Amino acid sequence: MIRLCSLILLLSSFHYAYAGDDDSGPIRYSTDLSQRFTTYAMSKKDKAWSESLVKKFRYQGPVVHFVRTSLPLTVDDTIVHGAVYQAVEKADFFYVASGDAMLQLNTKWAYNPGVGGFSMNAPKSRNFIVCLHLNGGVPFLSSSPVHSGRVTWKGHDWNRLEER
Image (cartoon, rainbow, N blue to C red; front, top):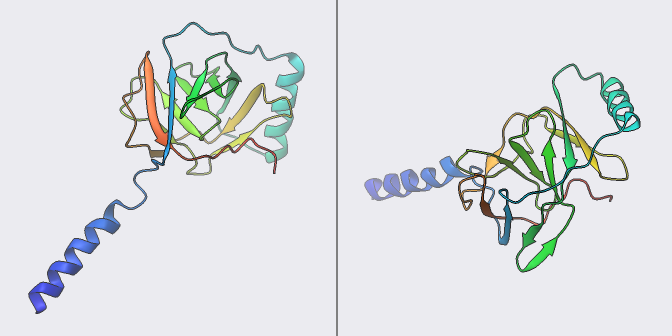
């Protein structure tokens, strides 16, 4: 009996060892990063807004700006426009507002970036995002590799830029 209880305890501990290591969900997302696309060009006013935000938060680390692209996003069977952003300072990073996903080219998985103090702030226009603490996240293990081509993953219906 003790061996059986020990085995059950051991097997249940494996479940907890992996809890939180995957942020996959029921919604299918995809975009094609090999398509030609345009990006929003930040104005002097946009840059001033960003600088004032950083000053207000007394943030001292690197700041990454994501600008809206013309890349379409497929959410289940619906095409969504205006949800995919590209980083200005790190062009291999794309942020997908619908579903809260980060795509970094030449990595194994898309991931949810919301860990380690990660912060995204956008003006009402949502044409650009100011990102603080860009430093990792929880992978979508359902993701295809992130490359210059079609990238797919399964996630949740979450958009940190929506007004509440």
